[in-house]
Image (cartoon, rainbow, N blue to C red; front, side, top):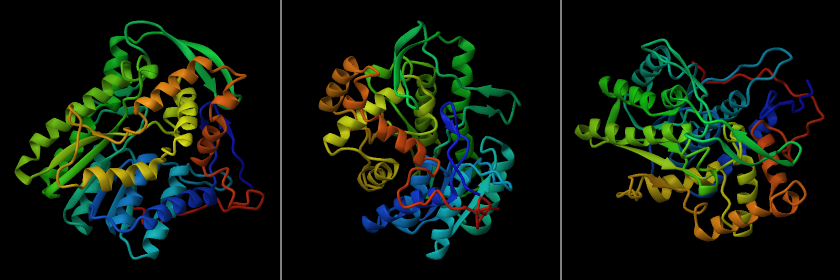
Length: 395
């Protein structure tokens, strides 16, 4: 079938298998170009099919020749209907890994559920014995709690006051003003239940109970802080409460791992175009200005560059450098004073008319469609593509 991008709001409801393969190959080639990494050897990635999770799986496998198990919740293809991009990403990753004799298997299902946790545990027991790294990179808007059965839904709201600021419709380029009503206590509790650290700790507790964690085991979850410009709707909003919980959970997990010399970290990463960030008001405008500034300064990174730097300059050093809150910071280039000062200056100037010049909205849109396998120069989108792609190591 001929596959074209079809958007609904901030998501694309189609994806291109050849384009997703191109995206994965580009990331693999980047990691290979950097040489071998003294990193993990047996890795579980929870949320492994897109963004930072996929980059972590690629960096582990092709940087340090690690065996990887990926867990994700993706839509498989049907005749005449494309799979989700994460499905095609994983298929491409496993194909390349198997070609090079690298172990890679995957589990598709709800990572919040006990069923998927147990299935993963059995696979680790059968194939890997023990693992030395767990990457926790889930980005789901909903979670059914495995104990209570309650379905929690996260929200993106400020706390205390209505928030009003600029945003951009990245499809049309129109800059306008948006107001978001403040959250309720229920909104905060539900967002923490979905995006906080409880499920991360449940995973680690279950794996440890089964003696599946190697000595000096590490686990890392991903977070974001961002600038003052976005803090009312992000770091000081409902999602910020969830990130606070996630970051505090790292200390709790570390305490539980002392007997095996284990350690849990939260890595604060830079702002990037993802399916999740596209949904957050204000963030697309901020990112389009940030990209312009970081590209001009030669500081721009995507997911794969960020995770390579995390592995080589932070996580696997003998003494992992952290901030005063115990967090790894690979948002350091984004948060540089000169970068943020320039972004703040451009923010004041940003209108529908000025944004094409002062921002990088085209770069934003290109990266958005890249997430779904579109807008790659190397791919001919006018020829038939086979949507029925299998994941070789799917369990």
